[in-house]
Length: 360
Ligand code: KG4
Ligand code: ZN
Image (cartoon, rainbow, N blue to C red; front, side, top):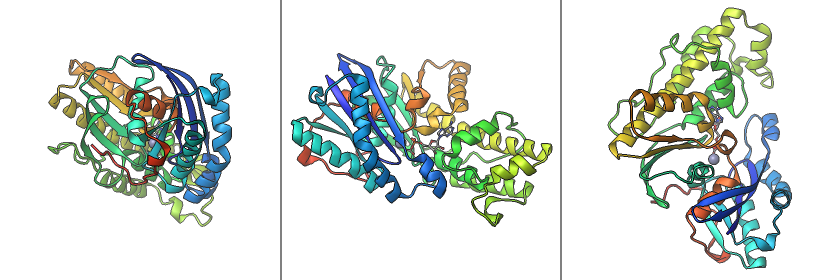
């Protein structure tokens, strides 16, 4: 079976072709166009700008995905499509394109929840994943912990009460003057830092549920930063000058080290909470696998800490993380979710749902 995947929920426009047989999938192409450079000039994603760019990209991206895969549009069996959650204008670009192809070629659509799509990035290279599995979805907008008892059999165990883990990275980075996405920048600076110099909180780490909270950590990071540096982005008259430029030119060696320590302390606090809660859920539900996904799953410290804790505690659980390029938004994960949850519908039944959550 050949599936065309489409993903346009936020600022990426992506198309992918996969071929699925038995329980395995083969990735034939994955094309991702991002309007990130545009958003850097505006300091963040402006929904209408993102959608306008996606209208320009969507056909060339599909065309390229077909060419790379050496597949004709007529040869596909179904279209797996992200229909929510996300920005309404962006979602509509994918939804309306998929409906047009579906109507014209008489091919069914498999509507996919974007967050479920993230989880399925794990199956692209690992068809042997065993259930029950605990899935941690950590992105810019979500921090969710789920129990998976089979394909399409998901139960939400908990989510964040305020900011998502990625949002905590992004907002803290922005405070330092770094543009979206802030996670990779914090992770880069953290490499030279010491996590013990700043005692940042681990919100809800010991709570008896599987809920998260990251806004207090962000505030603690803000206070620690402010205590050491008088120049913050908001204080700079020309807001186009980020603090990163100030760091490069004005910070002393000692100040730079403080910055690295702050970043490593923040990263470690986020990672500690995510790992501890996920392991707790895995033990409670006798999970055979732990799957992480979403943009923050690209974080190396998060991956290393999971591996280390599982080894240290001698727990018999397999840990999976998608390859880094498939952690952030892409259509391959959507196509994979469509293959393993094959519930095709006609185009008349498909509508964008920006507020979609885990409907299980
Ligand atoms: O899944 P994604 O591409 O988009 C959403 O659906 O939100 O995730 C983007 C998020 C951003 O918050 C970004 O800062 C974070 O993933 N991120 C990282 C890393 N790479 C991306 N966070 C920490 N470390 C990274 N290496
Ligand atoms: Zn995403």
